[in-house]
Image (cartoon, one colour):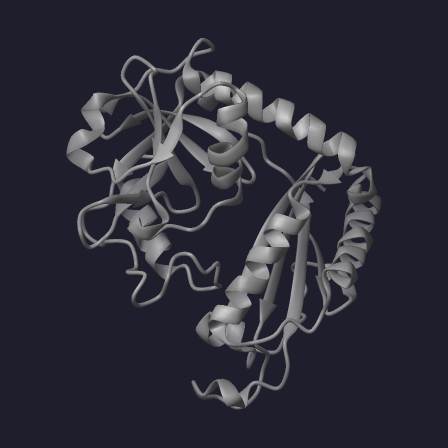
Length: 305
């Protein structure tokens, strides 16, 4: 049952391999949907309210309302998590994905055709960063064929069901043997990877930089927590700054920021190596994040699933 995924479609629990939604659903037809991903620590859903607030913002940007309250969805998450554990006997940490679509209706782009929102919850085991990647870091490659969506077209700040830009950029990097991609915006500024924000440590460990939201990135929850709380509390200077690929050589370290991986080291971007290891700023920051998580878990035991 290692690969089993528990699904919940509009309150109906089922194996995720079973069809449960109409092929006329706009999330399927057009990517007309928003989603969020949470993970648990010690069974507690982490940053629940922060992710929910972003979900509401994404839905508002697409012009549709969520038909369920945060409390209603959390109860469905608990049901889905319990069903997953019963089916698999798995007692570890969970990955939780919620997608809400505008709904189904006649074929056609007009949002007015939608007949009411649908939700789909997916729960499986959370896959932590492999030990080898913690030791050697992820290999990234710069996308050169395509650029990140402009915020003036399809804003990357909205967490929508449309990921074709990310998929094509990641595909280019994977064909070069990399684990992940680095995408740039139309101005040639570093944006983000396909599913992670980026952080860079200036040589000498004096400062940590991350691309600003205006460079066209998702407003990552982990990124925001590290930038505003974790790094300052741990004594690190971290700020937003425009970064260009030709500057990579001035950085000593690079790391990924994401909900499922928290902070993960990068070993190289194409031919540019970065320092990795237990004594790096990256791993000290990762330890500080773990301390923050421990305090969060202790204060939010009511969010255990």
